[in-house]
Image (cartoon, rainbow, N blue to C red; front, side, top):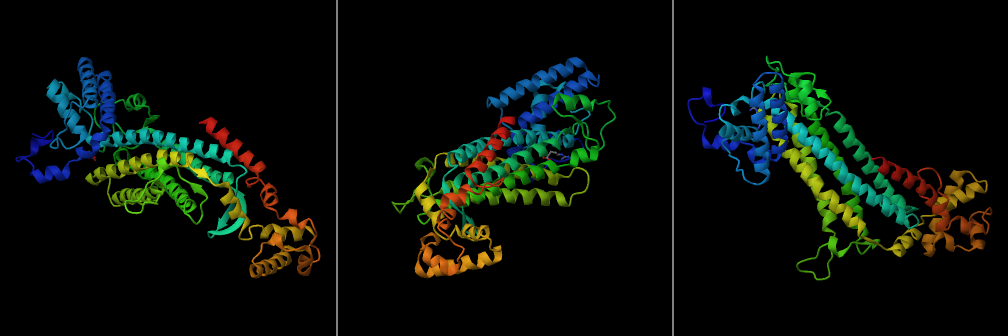
Length: 458
Ligand code: ARG
């Protein structure tokens, strides 16, 4: 007999049980469910809604159930539908009449809203830690590669020389924002829905402030309809996870390019790459590729939750049961990707020479050559044109800007002197880009200091 079976004259069809049941996935929330029930029953006892000694008995038994679940002693039942009714059914089996008092003044609607919120809060804290670990690895690598010159790209065409440290610190900024976004999301989840009831609270004198505090919330939600029907935090969290994945995916794409034979900027550690079943020579960046691929999966969860929520009237509707798999899958996926990605980049080997040679080719110092003319008094647009002509000449001659002899340089502009060569050297191009936020080792040192301050503040 179902806990809600009183008004029914027939058992539900077996297919309906299968269809309706969520225990196969919401069993993940057993801990949150039991913690929520303990807070609820403590409050019921304190308020005299049920006898204090019964509240104590229930509390104790809920603790036993928690332990039994963790010890693998409990087999959940599909008929009991979800984690909430599974726990309650076990409680009633063990305590009989006393167990039946637990659900006084509560609905599964506020119960599930609470469980999901608690689960999400824990998941966010966990994600923040994973992002923090990645940030530390990036910061450490950036420091090691403060002076490792590489080409910077726009349109995937060589643009201007930068350093690997500067490139890595761009990712630091992205993941730092992700970290802060997760913290912000947490701030908007500070109110407990417990006590909202099915939709309109109850007539019992519940102390919602008390249960909220017991569960680590700042207070109760302000509106009972919103309390049971709000899943904004699920959508927001999955959005935050989607951005984490988008950043990981962009980074993955670069890792994949960089370890190709054509780039050869990096080599992945053998422990973080895979081979081919037919081609003996292959070493593939599967981790980066899978991370890039799994990004689609997390985006899928985001669209799932947004679509589930878009058409449901207030307050609770069963559609909302579908929130959990999207939430769990997105969280589990990112939780898998972040640590392995951090280890993969931490163990990669950088080919300094390849990066440096890459920065040398492709006229990456052309802007600096134009700036040289500007410093000699030429307006920038004229300088741009002169250097453009010089680049065209070099392409024909298959040489670089620094290879043009001084006598020939004079044909392009008579303001060019011997100091042209140092002005456009790779070192000058990088070291003189000293503007705040720029790639020079000096400017980068400031960025790394700021990054360390941020990490130390966490
Ligand atoms: N398993 C349900 C869910 O995940 C719990 C709430 C069910 N409430 C209800 N009135 N049917 O949403």
